[in-house]
Image 1 (cartoon, one colour):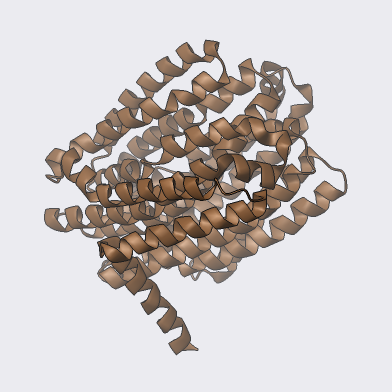
Image 2 (tube, helix red, strand yellow; image 1 turned 45 degrees about the vertical axis):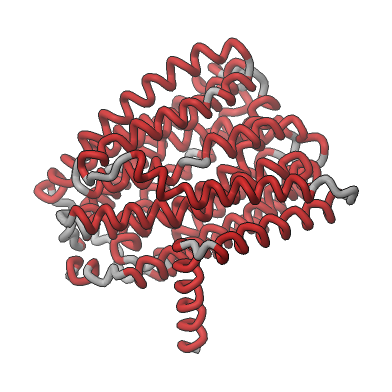
Length: 491
């Protein structure tokens, strides 16, 4: 497989088209999932959500062992071929099966730690997602390497729709927490099966130690970095689940869910496309810097107004979607919006360092950030769930500075330059936020008020973008038009 020839096709048009495919995939799937979560939240108790959230956190940590490190190494390697992918696939399968059985036998101990013996069967069933992750991780690396992100769209939408029917049907049948488990597993199974049917690549179950060694040499540092990062992201949930109640964890997670949903989908859509482009441009310092600047400008242009809008309408939105039973989640939504807002800068800076093969720097960065984070969280847990949530904001600023610093030397891309690149999106989002707040002062019922606020926010932001001829606005508008025209021309 001539990977080098394929990567040379990563022109500006190719990157932007794949970003739009990725955005369509993420928001299409998450839109369906979001509707399902609203339905389930009205049927299933916060305690049930808290139980599944706690187990999901632990499984997310396990998935790092099979879904990161080596998969990143495959994308980063310029000449990765069928034997490289098959080698990693075989390793992932054995690793995921071993992890599943380890967690199967540790389930009683985990349940005892949280003093919830009824968690044992749920842990054992939900842990099957680790094996599915071992397969799916390589499929995703293959698609990313070939820049075929339209396949993600088809597989993810198919899996999400099937899991939506499964979850809602189980919830209405009175299965409670098992409805959430069924939804998660159905989604992963269908996603994996659809990709297996669509992909031209299938593993031949060959393993090459010679190919594995250089991939492992790069991948183990990325793996440890991602493991530390995943522990960091989920540490709050682990601590809250242990020290406080399942309901506390459910309110915290539900408040974070909406901002995390937006940030994850926009950021993942953009960065998953830019990372192989970074890798292809490795060795061209000016080209890399240009790509990173485009990535930061584009992602902040989309994310900043979303976070600002969510923060302003949070109380009304929670009440409409989940009923007043979930109103305790509102402060956590505010905090989530302001702590997640700079994620595009985090990931863009880290990914370009990875693409340059400097996984050693990534590991050092993660150790520093997470050491500081763990100390802060352990100190703050005694002051309550809200204190734990609030400390995420200063920690996010600290992490941003640490992540950005290496590129001031590696790419001559200073923190000041990065701020200047995001400033247009920042000031327009602030103006938009004020207008959305003022629109909310009209004496209207909840749903009409929310609609007016959304329309006002979109109108103000797009108007400001058009008046200032914002480069990201013009770029996204032009590429979206080209993509739509291309679809109709093919028809």
